[in-house]
Length: 315
Image 1 (cartoon, helix red, strand yellow):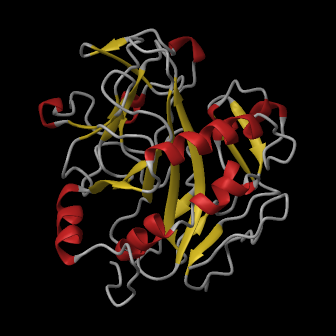
Image 2 (cartoon, helix red, strand yellow):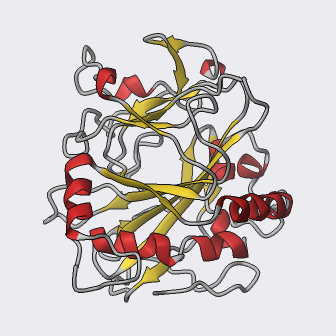
């Protein structure tokens, strides 16, 4: 996978690609200067409080009681629309996925002082919460998943709840996404799992384990410490989690994840809504964004501009 004939200023070298394919992740790498990112976030956090132009305006999303409220703000924010197409990101994604690439989803991941960490998990079709596949690769492909680029908008370290990876776990799925998890918001911030306070936004990700007795080998876990403006690129099938925010600082940890697939992948097939995390929203205003190359897949709905008319950039 990948097309080394398509080169950009930030394309991955053969050595970097080899490491990525072995480890399942690449980075951290710089997308913004530290002060630049801090200034951007001070400005944008106030603008994003206005959900008037957001694509998901149903009560379930706009109430803030469900993780869906953090989805796809690049579809109404000019700053985030430009972010998903930055060459520092797209050049590296193209190195892995090939020349024709969609950004199909973005998500904010805030972690406030005292918040629990996130369970170890993997995602292939992203059916983990709803039971409905959200991305489907062609049948000829042996494996699926998405490339996630997780950008630190604030400090991300072991005190504030940074990401953790178990390198090399991206080619074997330890979870069955066809199983259903039971949503129970009372589970949030309640349970210590193997000595670490972790959860999954009201679910217990262990419900999806293929072998109920299996446990991730946390002795191999690597913490992804990032400064504001740095990013990490990884397969969604890589075993990943996050630490809890221990409250030693009052600063929240904020990550912004942009998710990419080749255009041949079907996005939200055979569905007109997202139902998960105790909420439900319509996809009637949704569109994937072509960030590189050409789209030869007529089954995917495509957005060419934000809801406020800001055009997306295709590289």
